[in-house]
Length: 141
Ligand code: SF4
Ligand code: SF4
Image 1 (cartoon, rainbow, N blue to C red):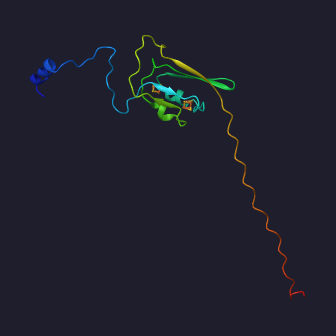
Image 2 (cartoon, rainbow, N blue to C red):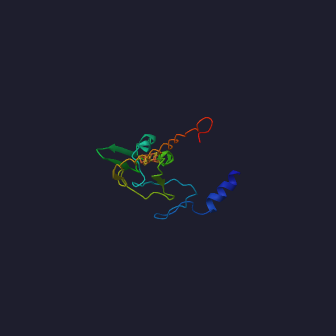
């Protein structure tokens, strides 16, 4: 594209910005705010270790744990969501809301640790074969 065409488009192509509170449309697969489902979370803390931006905090307690997320630190990379085997994390498919200060959108959950599922009962051993009595040689009558 030559410079004159670019100039023409910039001058007469209309506004490329929008006025607040209008929001731009997002494309498919857009990564927005991280959402947490405490019902599905197992408390493994993998998301905490995968989040190099330190947007996720994890504090283990006695019988529970605290999971926190601060979008003010989040880079929306999606690594926490990808690494959550329990599918407890997801990301919004829309722009995050406007906020003024780091911490304004922070949320924390205190989650009780679930009791481990009972181990399945061991299968019963096969029934012992009943002893067979061989007929006496010669065939007792
Ligand atoms: S959200 Fe997922 S990765 Fe993070 S602690 Fe819970 S189960 Fe583990
Ligand atoms: S999307 Fe990335 S930066 Fe945001 S909480 Fe997850 S791992 Fe951290």
